[in-house]
Image (cartoon, rainbow, N blue to C red; front, side, top):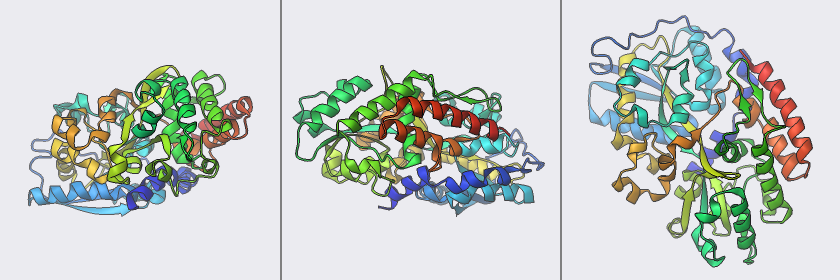
Length: 441
């Protein structure tokens, strides 16, 4: 269950980060020199050792690519140092202040902007523009590494949310899974029909006491409606909760399923420790999650009766959380040229197309070749819908969503389990605005 646990920690284990965020970043604005990425031979003639820091939560996927890179040539050697997710921001900020930075960092895409706004990463725009597949990169992840039209990192591995469904239960209920997952009313109808099958089946399942998971799988419903709950440019952001119709209808959808007992009772206290076990056991019709939890950890029998689509909005359209990691080169990196050589290798199709073996999704839409589709059919939906990949660009994501006392989980639980929708949205608006005002750096 290592991969299953990895994803839970990656999504929900960042409370310590949020607590330490302000002191960690205070004064970490970089005065380190920036590599000349336009120099002749940059990233091509590199030699020596490249020190790569990666998140402990994603080390399996990182090592997979690093091992392939090191075996492919003998001019550059990449050495990997895993860093606990809850310590990553603090350790990197300390390294920047001390002037002793790694050559390249594999960083949670949500946290990329924390350092970009402190002028701590190298501007890679000329290199990104030279990529003949730049327009096929995951736009949500690339956006989290972009400021004022300049790219300070590239997407590396994607961890997208999607809606996985049990085709056998849909068939028993006499439903077409694609038609009944187009919008919230259709999914509610499907949940009722599947719940009516009896035999301990449920229409839906979600771990309702895991902050990171709720941010990962619930928000895409509102993004699909083009109604984000964090609006404005960094520095002048505010929440959009109280008058956000998509948030209201999404919470109403979950409240109705809870009130009608279409969700397992265990969802009330589900904290991620057994995330997806009920779906993998075949007792749940629809399950919002990611590839690793829903598919990679499932039996071959369960995989054979699993389908997947992106998460729909209240009235249609689809979206996915643009989770995963970006590769960024800190200013002052001793071997920036070698770092880019590795980054370029990591983005090549052979490496990207092998990512599902480690539980991740490629960041290039053109990775979905016929061969890829045949080998990883349940890892195709995020690539076909890559334009729907999104995550908010904000310096307060962890405070708003990942902490266990965050306003997002508080609003969800108040609306869904307590039935106080108006109170949840009103208080959520106040808490979002307060945190966003305090978090502007």
